[in-house]
Image (cartoon, rainbow, N blue to C red):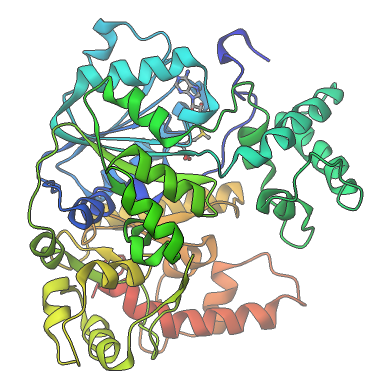
Length: 495
Ligand SMILES: C[S@@+](CC[C@H](N)C(=O)[O-])C[C@H]1O[C@@H](n2cnc3c(N)ncnc32)[C@H](O)[C@@H]1O
């Protein structure tokens, strides 16, 4: 371990992942859901604190030539990789700063622009108090009045049951005298799996423990190392995070997991009575954390909270479907059961969304037995089925170049882990995708009416074995049928 790492993992990179919840379009949905005034605007300055390998920053910069998008991280390997992608894609508006949050002076903080949006995903609950204090100082000094902050973090009590598991990971990994952090985490995992049948009584059978025990769906070793091997792994109670952020005058807006903003979808009757007896604010959020099976929260805060009409704000959102809408309403699993729309309400909405982006206001006015509640519609569709469209449809040479560079890079490194995204001008963000989708979408000739799935499979996936080939051809054939119209809609391919 190096001296500068303050107990965080720095000998190997974090996963290369795009986070949709960090995007201004998603933050705008949360603000509308809460009836809070905020909308993305031209010329914004956006900062991602602890940006890792910078994929989200680069996607946002590619999709928004007029935004200044900055990533900050103390790991020079992360910053170098992020800069390399920005340079290869010629993103003059993506900037990366190598800085230790615990040590930034006021003068260094003031070199950052005044910020409209700050995002902090996967940092707060893995770092020391000094780093947390650095984050609050940055927010207090550089987040504009009216600016928003998205933060994703491990929460109590949801992740508290894994405190012993984290300690065990660290003890077992320390036995490995050689190897990188992911290799040591993988060795620790083997021992932990061996305990599945004879778990010590205080190693709780939490959802995380069960995921680790599942050999069929192994978790990425880089994720495990960064999640569990840090010295400062400390999930927090919401109220303690909110109190810390209040030091930068931030107030809570809502959850980026849309249905978590709707008490009707969360609580059984007795729980609901307790919830409603509590004052608005941290106590009610605590009640949610107590009742929900969630170890990780994605929250939006704002510096200067102003209320607006919630229904009007929701109705103004324009939604673009990320896939062909299924014939029946999606069924959203929520703590009290399954949330779905009646067929008479859903069918006209699905048909309209299959035509192209629609305002939520228009969707709600389509013929049906009643005018549905806009928050409920957004909760059911907002878990990935729709994204907020901030601009007119259409492709751009800039995003096209970025997507091609991203593809070339993933192809060169053979990276198949992590959540990728193709930059889309319409959503001012990314259209999440797998590496196979990226590879297929970037093949020349893909939009030709006579595009041959067999040839495209071989071009996109040149290293297939004979055994893998038929399955891959099937997959690509389905992908062409299902994804081409969506790729055109999002402007990642010319319409
Ligand atoms: C779990 S990773 C999350 C990365 C990224 N936000 C994502 O979700 O893909 C935490 C990040 O915080 C960075 N970090 C940890 N301590 C830091 C510090 N003192 N100053 C700046 N960055 C730090 C790490 O280098 C790492 O990239």
